[in-house]
Length: 455
Image 1 (tube, rainbow, N blue to C red):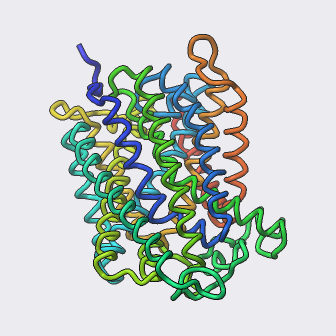
Image 2 (cartoon, rainbow, N blue to C red; image 1 turned 120 degrees about the horizontal axis):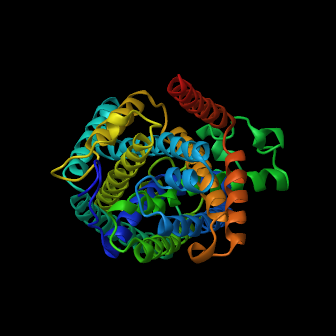
């Protein structure tokens, strides 16, 4: 007899890979790549590789842990089992706040492509509610919709890449470098355009002189670009958070995570190189939240190509949002089961076998952030903070695994932990402060709950 709140195993390898792809492609192609290019200039592909290397280390840790513990909750469950309840809570709390920020970013990107500024927040909120409704009727339906959305997004990106190469080969080169029609902001890698985006606003990077030019400034520009790019890679862990719903989890989860990560890494690297070949973004505002729409305009592509990339962007961001809401709700489900969130959230639907209460609460939190957030890149940085700390705990937990469950060398977990901490330190100062405040609130909440139980 199934236990209360138990979920059904319905996802096969193909479904798990598609959900991982849908979770990553929307963020990387339509948000993070432009920000990385603004910060690192011609060295943006290096930032992609750094983020991919950290993600690979984290992916092996996540795969190894998920194979031993194929249940909902991801590193919340892993950390609790391997390191202790407080570590598990820290991972789960960081995941929830980070991914709520991710959901808000994706919803705002969708709205930015569909409607002008005055109506964007309302449309973004409606998108969140609509995609949550899809999740509420079953995880297999989530996988089906994700497959359609990721297919549309990939087709649009491939077509756009081909069009950009054609435009670059046909258009005369600008004397300052880049395609004709662009207005060079700078050909030197560094946080020049990033200043206007509000990314270099203090913190360790400012203390050590980032933004002042020279090798140090270039180095920190690349590292901060890698931190924002990591946001785009984080979707591979969505498979682990759905571990209780995957068939043959010991075999399926590691394969799905690594396949999705390898495919997306190749795609991001190619797209980053395309942006470098196109040249610096026109104007002083950088590439913005729609870098490839701007790139198509810079090579003289017509409105039809703008429509194609818009459809792709909306499909990709919708696919990412669809999987993100599912992942957040599963972590909330696991935390509620463990008593670290209200136990009412642990109840799942008997008809559709999904955690409906957790889904609804997660959606409401995203809607609130959508209505209050000021900038997509601020949401991206906030997400990176929470997710990187989440993976830091995952690496520590995987490091302690022994015996048959050790699938990868410990060196990868050490490199993953160091990489996570370095990228967190490179984030904007305001993001770090706000993130630490939210972490402290979560720790205080758990402390109060535990003290209440003792009495």
